[in-house]
Image (tube, rainbow, N blue to C red; front, side):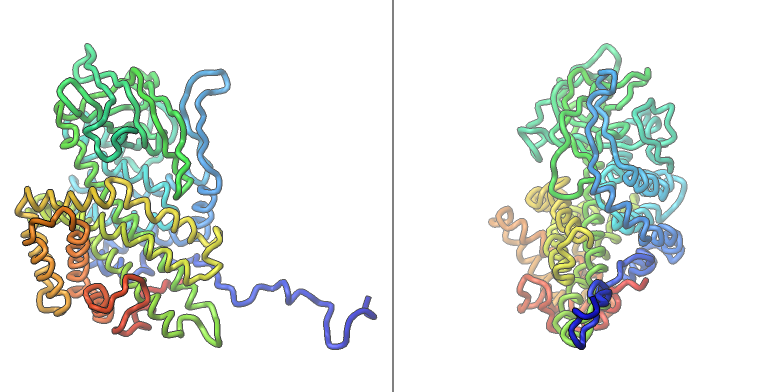
Length: 557
């Protein structure tokens, strides 16, 4: 064979198979401590000790093992098991072991309902700690955050009935992941879900048709109808809305009844969704399903609204988490990939793009943590009013900004970012979810108008919050003044509700960055988001120390 080799050529082709100029996987870093925007916000709103509490979670979230489990949970989809081997109707869902690995650690880190009991025990930063942990841990895989979020959100709604809250809260707050359909008395921990929307109504829950008829047992009803979207049907208890004789009412639906028998909850099918495939989103039929009334008849929306508020906070946290994860991958990639004679991070235009992504991520993180800290102060009138107005503002704005931001981060990786192994395609598919769940963009923008019209204290809270940065940046000051002028034009408020919500949210973000972020971050944000040259896409910054912003955002393994 050597006679066939041309002069000057080698028959050793190993160099052709060697991968060069490929970026190492972003593993082995601490997702919490490597995120300066997060740690600074948590230390400022809580303490350095809260950051230290999250270090173990951050290390586990950044491990190669967590990354692998996140990929496997989405590669092996949950499967509906309507009958057991003997023909008994069971309506269960089988998950891959990686799903259970992720869930066990999320529950073990107290990311479900634990903060409510911690708060009652005197922990002043329980919800901030949990929010930062949820933000960091969701970067392992977004789908399993859904049952974790619903379990967290169920507790404030359950408090509408002291007896029901005392029955369920200890199980929901327990740091023991105990899957399986069994009686609550036989479980070390439980998870909660919710079922609000129906085929004919969607967000218009007052159009719900599911009927609830009282039984002879006081407080118990039988339900007949359906639920169009119920995620995590293997959870132990669900909060649902149904039409009782007195109107739309909230109900608690246990998977297993007090006597130990299974409740009638028929899982019709699992949804074929755009985003994550790890979580089982289902359609349910209810026919003779037993449910316990929560709150008064006819006050279902008012009863469940606290659960909606808490899940909206998690929508903001989840979207901010996707932003941060995408940014981390993009900044890591350009810091290790060479092209056109040097590292990508040294190219001025790439610096502009990544710096802009970093500014967007830091603004989302700062606002999300600020909202979480408000939950820790339920007795503070300003914090309550700010939470009321800022939640729909942030839900609208941060969630709307996420798809474009993740798409731009994917582009930083080029073709490598377009393949599933990079993790960016899953993030991109997931990115529209939080803008749809718990009220679409229009629903949240209109909720802003509703709050402004009915609760004068919320506008005062917003003005106070953005006013704390007054004089720090003239562009922010002008944006606040412009927003107040829009509020004065009452004739076109509904048609312009999205514009108003976006302006108010950006002003909140700008005020936080001007007050607390490094000068180069605040300058880049105010110069672009409130400047006249902003083109609506990323990478069009005209000021600031871009390299410094990029270095601040890049994780270090």
